[in-house]
Length: 287
Image (tube, rainbow, N blue to C red; front, side, top):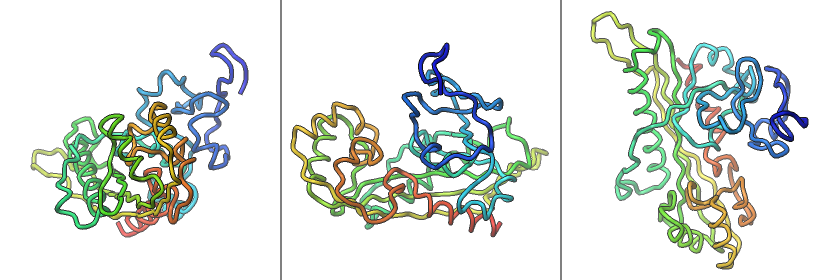
């Protein structure tokens, strides 16, 4: 980083394929500047243009466990059915090049039909992916014969069977955090993946049929310290809780309220990397 025309600490050129630690790839901020999408030239786009970016490129090759299916990944276009910045960061940490396509599913499934909150999260993720799958296959601009891998996720907080999603307002956020204070709860992230090919458009009314469609869930136990009302109010005023299940983000200031976890940390952030990697390896190697 250097002092430049764009202000202090403008990020310089990123060389595709250059090695970087996980922390460097995952963090949204490096010395005060946002880490955004890298264009083909490898130059980082300014933070002011981040909202328009739809493709995230972090490094050329899939790394970690996904090394096992690196060749198969080169043959598919990966789509993340989520607008969550945390999920985009986590996907990028795996070294994936992907497109984002936000699902329009209303996320209004009847919770009473699900004895387990984990199943509710998995089904919600399934419907998100199904929505994006339909939209892609009906898009005439997509090349016939191209193969896609659509990944979706949904995270909920489960306190004694009570499902907590995103707060509707500040009062709702306070009520959630007050309940979580001094207690242990479970965080469930449902994950769904669809592998399919764009059908030929030859007038035969052929419809895309998924080569594989799977869903699963991951659960992490989280324990909160006792939180004074003053701390809860200050945290809510920061704005961090308002777009997060359970009204907290473990990767931010909300992490200071967590006294312990049992299970996958990234699952609490919104995408269980180990579980997702295993699903992708199994799906791509099988199909």
